Amino acid sequence: MKLLFDQNLSRKLSLRLSDLFPGSTHVIEIGLEHRPDAEIWLYAKQGAFVLVTADTDFGAFVREKGFPPKVVLLANCNYPTRIAAELLQTNAIRLRDFETGNTGLLVLRPR
Image (tube, rainbow, N blue to C red):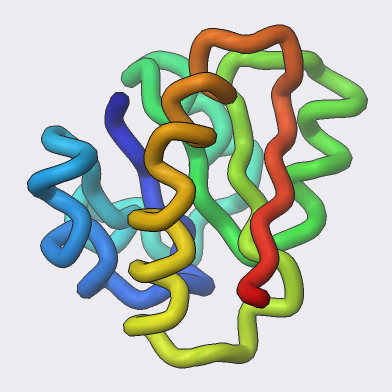
């Protein structure tokens, strides 16, 4: 499973999570920073990424356009990068199930 981290999340996440999610990247690393959501959505779809974001607009994309790509929304993501990384690490099995499941949006919140 490859994750594509949106610009509203730290670019450090792709490095911190590379052991669990090889091939993951951040939009900055591929030149998509400050690009419209539609372009990021299309890149994720064409590259078979699961899009990880704190932007609720991508939830609307899933409702309107369906999936792929699937979207993981880090809800109320005003927490440090370390917490975001831990949230994704502790939900790794859930993320893998989500990737193969029948839903397009997964919302994660720290406890």
